[in-house]
Length: 140
Image (cartoon, rainbow, N blue to C red; front, top):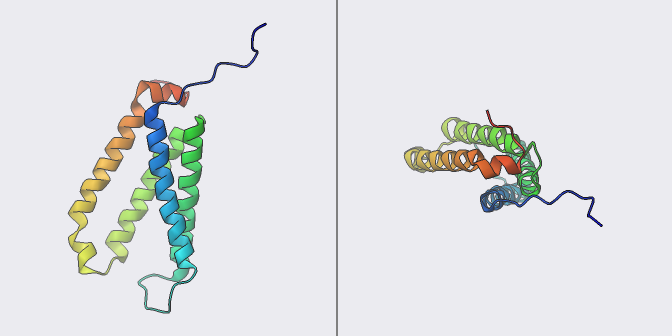
């Protein structure tokens, strides 16, 4: 007798690493959200609600993206691409518009290098043929 279930797709190692990286970011944002619940009464450059909403939003995106990628859901690659670009856009908007310390303003070149490395790494991983096959993406 044959097994009626289709053969399981093998998850590429790069997808596992990407999932763990995104999950790590989600955990840091979850920690930021938890810390935001008990912020002391100090002057902040943004309202507390903004910090809570931002961290909750990106923790949710990161957790879902990591889980979907790990499971090989067909929409996971798109969620990683679009959500990742939104995260980076929001990060740079925060950094450029809301940062008030000299340290943050003076360290933007280093942040730009790490941003470029992250974008390049994710783009290369998601463009690999075995990763595209795993997410069942059509090649154009």
